[in-house]
Length: 302
Length: 249
Ligand SMILES: Cc1cc2nc3c(=O)[nH]c(=O)nc-3n(C[C@H](O)[C@H](O)[C@H](O)COP(=O)(O)OP(=O)(O)OC[C@H]3O[C@@H](n4cnc5c(N)ncnc54)[C@H](O)[C@@H]3O)c2cc1C
Ligand SMILES: Cc1cc2nc3c(=O)[nH]c(=O)nc-3n(C[C@H](O)[C@H](O)[C@H](O)COP(=O)(O)O)c2cc1C
Image: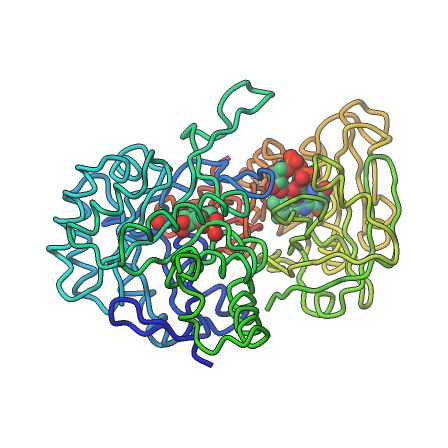
């Protein structure tokens, strides 16, 4: 049975990866299972300098999901490269560096640093709803997506560039094409859906940043729809994510057009989620007489 | 190492607003430290797990005590003896027994995680337990089994002394070399201040809204001073116990 997929020339032993910001830098989950069992690991969102993130509270529960407002807390890319990347490389799992910035210049600089490192992919996060300047704003305007993709791509050298799209747009196909035309080598979608909670006691927004990002099972149908739509306009590799809680959810996204998937919120509920989903996927394939994962990918378009 | 266990509910009792569960968890019972917590799947439409402290270890069982606050704790309070719950744990760092004579100071629900600490510290320890009123007093007899002395204070004076735990703390603090405390932030802030004035080490067990419990999502951070600069550390992984001098209340 073949479960391997190739994304931009990098071989993933299976299509199950993990979503940025839900897996730390891999160390914690490696205590539960060997993370090299996964296709790839996307590390938590990185910025040029260390960031402390938003004030508490940063998380709340919703029906079938969660909202978060972490605000890109991270030690900065240099510290990541020095203290965390060697561990991931030693484990032997492909690494996706999720990069973030407050302005295009920041993105360009951090991409240049990532390009010279041992990471396997650069994931351009232009869809974070949790930072006041930058973040989602970049991913919500076609012209900005074009400009930022073009300028970042110029810094990436040989490293494949994944552009992570925001679901908080009217037509995600427009953004996908804007990224493709300006050098994106792959796309990942979806980031969190912008939401809000009002605290009944204080009568004020629950999160200091007012809006927050909805993820988990609640967003899965949105992710399926968007991956399907994007697949109708591009043949770029797609890493599909959004509310994958079990193998069936992952298979659905692959049938909709994803070449690989990322497990996010599910890991917060059960640290074994990504591995369990990978194992269930293999079982699904053998139960259904599927010898190659390629038979599942894009099946809904055939 | 923590792991996920399906734990049978051996015994359940309810008293005042508290639910007291004894669950079968041999692996957790064997390796957990006082001050650590469990991340419990409460079922019934909840998404995230809920953090509940280890109150006591009894043989191969672990005891947890909690109060119904919302959806999750309500669902958990409706569990039945003989049923089972999914538990991720033990999590967090736990208390550090770096002192000989330990003073334990708990307020409200913060009393619960201190019982196993009392058991570990033994007869050298003294506990000050603060509650709202007499009907809220819980675990007093349990603490008396392990501690040299147990003081009770209530806000309204219906049990023990009327007033704050810190009133008692100020009176008896001499003679201790370590304080462990858990309770509302304002209480821990005041307890820490008394310790600072008396130059006594103080460990505080903090609460924050939590996602994963394992340190991957960075949702339950608190600002602490470490290595000379403020940093946001996860209560679930770097805590819940911190040196009071590091914490900004
Ligand atoms: C390390 C730690 C140990 C704890 N130990 C105990 C214990 O032994 N006994 C006990 O009664 N309570 C304990 N708590 C508090 C307990 O976790 C909350 O009361 C509980 O999560 C509330 O959930 P809910 O669904 O009933 O309330 P809701 O308000 O419906 O919860 C909504 C969300 O907010 C979170 N939340 C709400 N209040 C708190 C809080 N005070 N702290 C952290 N998260 C909160 C919930 O986990 C949930 O994700 C502990 C908290 C922490 C962080
Ligand atoms: C706590 C948390 C932190 C996140 N941090 C990032 C981040 O730093 N960068 C990023 O591109 N996406 C981030 N995301 C979005 C996820 O990578 C993913 O796109 C989204 O959660 C949808 O997948 P899910 O429903 O499976 O969680 C974060 C999500 C969560 C829940």
